[in-house]
Image (tube, rainbow, N blue to C red; front, side, top):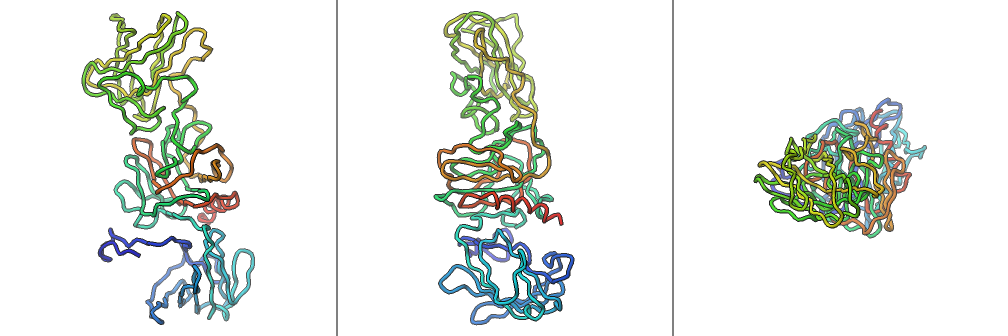
Length: 457
């Protein structure tokens, strides 16, 4: 462990230097014939003593008086735990965790189902040999309950699936304390998420530094992996604003849901503009669709090849719900064949954020673009388990234990894990994040799904 300053200051908690391969969030054993787990009973630490420099711990759990001595397995990664438990005439039951990163071997008792049973006499003195299973345990596991993760001004703690969850508010991404990691054998991550507004997109829920992350879109696909696409991206032949000629607006990426590599943010001066060069094949009526976001009415004047209709008012670009709620400003006009220059110019000291232009003309075979590209959300505002498994250039995304989407990936992820995404988006709750250095089979995903039912019991 690394001290990280004074042990008396709770904001400078020590850091675990090695790779964690086993965690017990509650006491694994309880008395036979009890209705509730001993892990839920009142626990009391009563001190320790040193035996050959190794501490022997003493504590009470409910009616049980426990003495525990731990030593490292010689030449192997694991522990030998020696127990003396008094106070249970009926005996003790040790629940075996199928998600544990260790194998269990008891010197006394019998296995029954998914638990190890010891009589009261056997529990008075027994040993458990726990040996690491390589790559079994998550390389990063955050329950959102521990202080090292949750002390951050960006997060608020609320009731979660298991214990507490973290309310994500957007802005700068949060990178918990962790070691950078490579994933030569594949990768996986799982987390519980609860949306506050399923009708709005979130460009990143959990992401790697390199290789992408899980995003949310309010349509039938819902969750995806990689850079978040905009609704309708690639379906209408749109022209990105960042690829156009512009003077005054700045290229930005902070607000999620845009298409392409960014969007143009108008500044505070009159006369700022963005101009697209459009190839018109056939003369006649055309529909111009400008995808934008705005906090209020921010009109822009339209011109074609430098000519304006001085009798027509500027295009209104009415306010959308937020800077991440992208809508379409529709305008119809006649265009001549050839290369036409479509320009939007600010008429006040404020303008919208422009994402792209789509032009549809006679004979194009394209349908009209609606005022908004968003679809009815398929998600609700309850807790859902999202699991991503990556293996050999393929990604499988599971929602509540069932295969949700499957697609190709170009390269494996790498680096640290970040929570939340930059820019503005609706708030969401996050709980029980796990990151693995291997793909996850369906059986383990189903076991993670069962956490919610077990926590409710």
